[in-house]
Image (cartoon, rainbow, N blue to C red; front, side):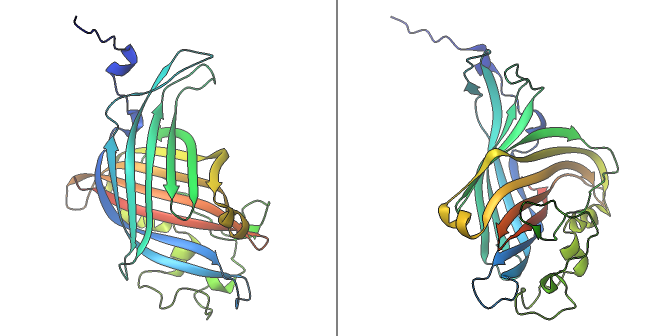
Amino acid sequence: MKATHHSSPLSEQIDLGPLADLPGFWEGTGFSLIARPQFSGSDNGFFLQLNLLRETIEFTSIGSPVVNRGSRQGDIAIGGVTYLHRVTDATTGAALHIEPGTWLNVPPTQEPASSGSIARLATIPHGNSICLVGSSEIAELPPTIPPANTVPFKMGGEAPPAGTKNPFPEYDLSCQTRFRTDPLPAGITQDLIDDPNSALREALKDQEPIQITRLITMSTSGGVANIPFIVSNANTATVESVFAIERVRTRWGATVLQLQYSQTALLSFGGLTFPHVTVGTLIKAF
């Protein structure tokens, strides 16, 4: 007897949507700013760690649609890519970060009502797991990149407006302190500390953007899960990120795919919330 396989129409297409250019191998550089808890000896209870980064991200397309079964509407098929993000210190070569995860392209739905969305799921070996949900957009050219806030603020309060002076000497390179990265890697300036997104604008300065697709995501309710140690010592409650897939013409006349990102995770301890900001610019190599 011949077996018959009844395939669902959902299995006939893989729709990556705004993620279509991600599969492949990307490499580049970046910058990280994090105020990490200092258990003893510090007047302000933290140490400001500043790192120049070398980064790679490898994206792999999921080979078939991921079917989510509906109870209040029909089934949906999700397209997606898995990824592995590796980060090392550009000065010392030391390992800093490794992050396996998944990007998803979620189609429009009736329950809940949505015109379509994207999602990023990731796990970090410090003991964090995140689910970020958002949307994509085609950016206007030339692109506008707003500043990233690095000024700590009262726990439960609002982040200060752009241009607010940082009250902590650890963030001021004109102040001597034992509680900041020393020696400071060449290339880290006061402007970079005040606004890490300035590195993204600098990278675009000698390029001609042709098309930019932004992937804008943030943690939803319950979107960050942490091990108990992190909850007690430096709770990470929210994460938001913007990844920009850019087709640009370089100053040498070549057209390349470039990935720029800016991510802010908010760490809360000692009555304050500290923005942990990471930015990067990577080129699609393969």
